[in-house]
Image (cartoon, rainbow, N blue to C red; front, side, top):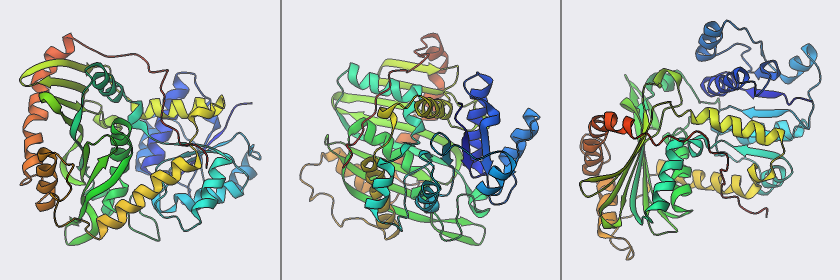
Length: 421
């Protein structure tokens, strides 16, 4: 029996997921007729509508599970995959609702941030289900290459900076990812991706040294805590990560910069997940002082969303227990995000950074630069990163294309999995 997939939500996230499933259908991985979309509006968002028009297809958008089962058939509760493409503020409630309907296979778009229910209840339900959390950037060729380089050169990180920025003002003013009950903060859009990337490279976050946000301005409208955000964390390996996101930036940026001991420096660009930005090439550069030691350009693209959902779908089909998230995994990620949101919206910034005795001088300077000002136009560290980013990377593209380090597949991916409590 083939597994059906129910996408909950016909907005941008629903479009991104359906688009990947459609690519998997074209590759004969799944049957697209088994992909069902449910949205209370009963119609596709603009991105799904455009995709349907482009591909000359017309999938039906159902308003409820009841209408699906009236029109088609009763869905197999044990094998149907529920793909929750919903605003972060309603994910936990919807997970529990669909669990109570009898479904046991889930894909979660992001960590829960609005746990109105008991953590233990949610954890128990997850442990009794087959849940996969979306961490699509871990499935990118860029990220695997970064990890390979760190291991190859035995690099010791001091400071990392992720910068996931874009101009989201139109989407935000239109209410994308907003729920009826709450307005999402900047920490619920890109920063969850940035935190799991940092933790995959450097281990769990021991504590947050600085969390800040600023409002988004769209004309005369102000969206609180939604414009710019920064999260500075200290990891169990001793390094610090700065996760910076500006949702009113003039271009799309998905970058990682790592300063290591002994003058090693790594710069990586992750490919955006939208097809309309497919001309942004992904790549990785490692240098020591002024010498380039490694350079990889993925000229064939790096569709991490496709790889993530292929991994999720096949793991569900084949019951790969090591791919499933435990209750401890989900609660850990959710607790971290709730802490970030609370601190960032309350402006959490210790008076003094230099009283943390085990921080390197460079680490203290970076943190203080963000404490004082984190706008790209004036922040000294962001300016430093920007100076070497797009221009430097673009100049290296021809040479990188000749020494392409692209890998075809990453079938032996292993992720950290917390034990069931």
